[in-house]
Image (tube, rainbow, N blue to C red):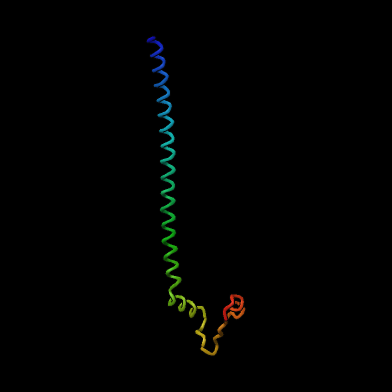
Length: 96
């Protein structure tokens, strides 16, 4: 009877240690995966901030006007302006 208890205890102990090693390896793999995803998140946040800064810079009307003048464009006089209206779109919606 004592030998059965010994072998049962030995098998359970071995299974416990095998499970412990398995869980430890899974934890290590998941930890490296999380660290990689956190680095990726930081890179994406940095890129997002850079894009927001570029959008703000491009949306600045003074910069647009300055760039247009530097590229040889001129502000159109009132008689040079053409106003386009969408007549077909109004009749298709039922509004007049």
